[in-house]
Image (cartoon, rainbow over all chains, first blue to last red; front, top):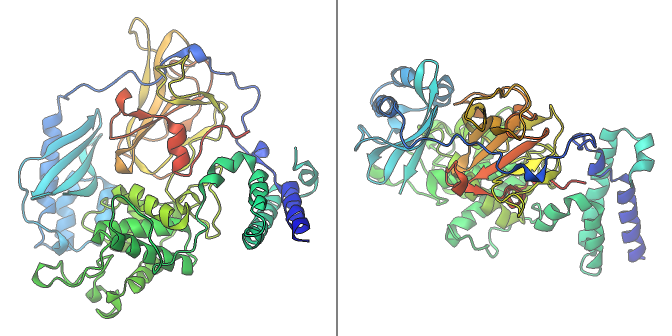
Length: 154
Length: 381
């Protein structure tokens, strides 16, 4: 009896199963095949070891950190201080934050660039032992701006 | 084709819904019968041959028991895993879709390292307590209520599900809307470990469709609870570092010209440009098809994701829709399939890099990587 039920269930589901063959992104037969001999078709514009505007990137990171490390100010003053150095979307993400939760008053050492491309940089700004702001900066038409703000501990 | 009888009479969405009901019902039935009929599982697996690889890995059917035995997680001790189990259990009980479980575990990893922190007195950050560092003074609950991780998790989910479209927001954005932290992007880096924990506790819920409370393996354009999705749905026409193409550090997906290319995971666009030149170094337009004599990956985009993973999308047919510095959500359209740069026909060349390394040393085979995060690519026929 149970065997019959199992078989029937499977059969019904098989009938209704529309499979991937009818999925909207099915590859049409007319697509030309990519030749296997094509070799390396990745980017061949790998980054230089340093960029001429590294100093600018570090200065913006420092200015942002200085404006962020002010736990004593009002929420509005805090946001206004960050605004010139941050993207609009980061300011939106910081709206509603209580600045008294900022855990330090000043940086503890120099900012350092972790990775860089032409228009993007990851910068660490130490604020305590084993504690740093992890900033993602982007080159915009208005100059470099901090776009993301995370934390590196340990 | 097995579905042809139904094709003629039932519209596709209805068929899909019907199929889901039948598969879900048959699945529930199977579980009851499994003890006696182990072979039934193999039959059910055979139902969806194209999804077999993900089904074999599991997509999170296990109900979590925080009082039971905990799976081993290399990065955590058992007490931490048990806290995560409470978070997932509360999410299951409230029918929160599995993406919510990953967001909640990642948030608790950042706020407390999955420890139920008491008020530490003078050393405490304001009146924050517990696994999510919620504050009694900010309306999260009384100190007595906030001593209980299950209560804390409940309050977290209550707030999370009020955020419009939370299921498809980048993890860090969804978490930040709940938490309002001074470090808004600190949550993102915990997405991989949170997914690993949820997978271990539930039997793979990180690979389930993230927005669907009815657990099912993510497929097609679904975004998995892990936060990952396939960039295009197409077969692989050339693999990663095959014997005939040892310097091919990605996979070629044979999608048709103009197919939308979607971000595989949330992140920040770090490159969006044209890379094409002739062998003599003279630059070449990316707005026209390239060829054998053209080098470079054409119009392309690099995205930096949580955990310092980078994905690359090459040979777009026109300028990318995104710009450097832009935050993108998983599934966001980056551009369209084309044949710019070193390409002999329209396809998406897709790469995955680890450790924030954009060079060849950082490249890994995208197929097992994407399979593991619940967004399998290629071989759909």
